[in-house]
Amino acid sequence: MSEQTPSYAALRPSAVSSLAGELRLACMRISRRVRYESTDSIAPHQFSVMCRLEESPRTPGELAEIERVSAPSMTRTVAGLAERGWVERAQDPTDRRQVIVTLTDEARQALKDTRRKRDAWMAVRVGHLDPEEQAVLQRAAAILTKVANE
Amino acid sequence: MSEQTPSYAALRPSAVSSLAGELRLACMRISRRVRYESTDSIAPHQFSVMCRLEESPRTPGELAEIERVSAPSMTRTVAGLAERGWVERAQDPTDRRQVIVTLTDEARQALKDTRRKRDAWMAVRVGHLDPEEQAVLQRAAAILTKVANE
DNA sequence: TATTGTTATACTCTATAACTATA
DNA sequence: TATAGTTATAGAGTATAACAATA
Image (cartoon, rainbow over all chains, first blue to last red):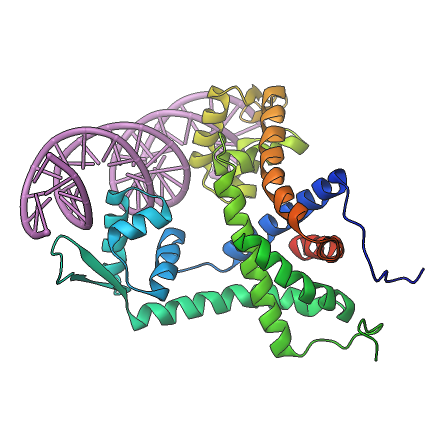
């Protein structure tokens, strides 16, 4: 039997459970550290809404549903973003009850800066790992992304 | 050259950077999903303080410093925990200005329940992976834990 | 006089309820 | 009458400043 077994047996439930616990805790700790260290100028709820608007403009109602907050909360959040020049509001020409919220170029740049700061924290630590550990994480990254998106 | 190379070259800076970005994002998404799905009865700031008290009793001043919140905020948080029966406050016999905050057994049980719920979310997803993916994550878990603790 | 913790007050983000404008 | 969004008001959690008790 070689050191790297070419085929694998499925983990037993108890092993799945302890692996899940260890991974979950590590992900939450990393997330916490990244958030803490990156001293954002963008508040978490603002950041989250701005990410949604990156793909396409949306109405306040859609944003409230996606972010699972109340409509008045989203009105307030959008107002704050507009005040800082990160979104623009326009009336929907086909239904004048609706408002279309669009991200500004300035906001896209701010998002880019924040992500760069966050990635930098992680990059320093990944850079300190030895090559074999980096290779394991390269394979793990895709799997964790799949888990996160499930 | 075999499919699984036995020795590895260190990643170039650009590769470290993109790996870091992918890992960081996956960890933050998983963290967010876990927090969202586990519908805690314990608020995040309460949970965090309770975890600190799990190791040993502490004074409000120590807790405020560890959690990086103001002393009045910690007074309030501790008062809330005491009201729910999760902590008990006692005067320090050697310095009567100080208060010793201790976790109750009920709180320890509540922490256990919350962690079990969080781990369950992750365990379902890890259980869906194929055996080889699970094997990769088993090696990655230890590395991520090291990164989180750095 | 310095330190520990609390109370007083204000600001932010959240919510529900009531209201306006439009369909 | 129903829907999209806003305004009114209140409840948490945070902060700084002022205070009480103790060292």
